[in-house]
Image 1 (cartoon, one colour):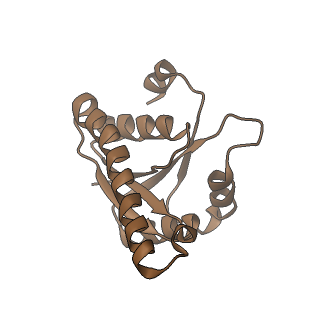
Image 2 (image 1 turned 30 degrees about the horizontal axis):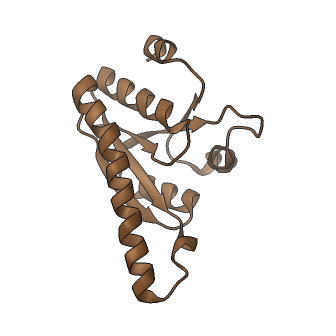
Image 3 (image 1 turned 180 degrees about the horizontal axis):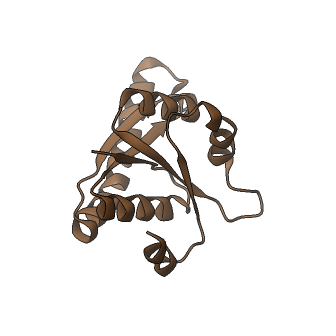
Length: 151
């Protein structure tokens, strides 16, 4: 089964990327893998404190994931998988694509602010020549109706 890999973070554009990935997967018989990355700089403390912070970060991710997973189950009939990795975002995204041969498309949400599409989109577009899968970039300010129309 071909999976759409989508990145779960705290950005506003993440919502449209999730919607797009779920709708495309549902319409094409695919699946959704949701990747959340914990940056390494969050754990520059003593070992005990770092372990507690790491666990708290994982708990926040799971709660955030469950919101999207419930919508995907209820509205799209999909049961997404959650993957949590620690490290630099681009490195971990590339590693996940390499580790999971079922991933067929990387879906990213583009920011709609004046600062551009966002650092993750910019970095991955620069690395796109070495990606083994295509990237779909979903505008963050695209309406729900427009998303439904194009998926």
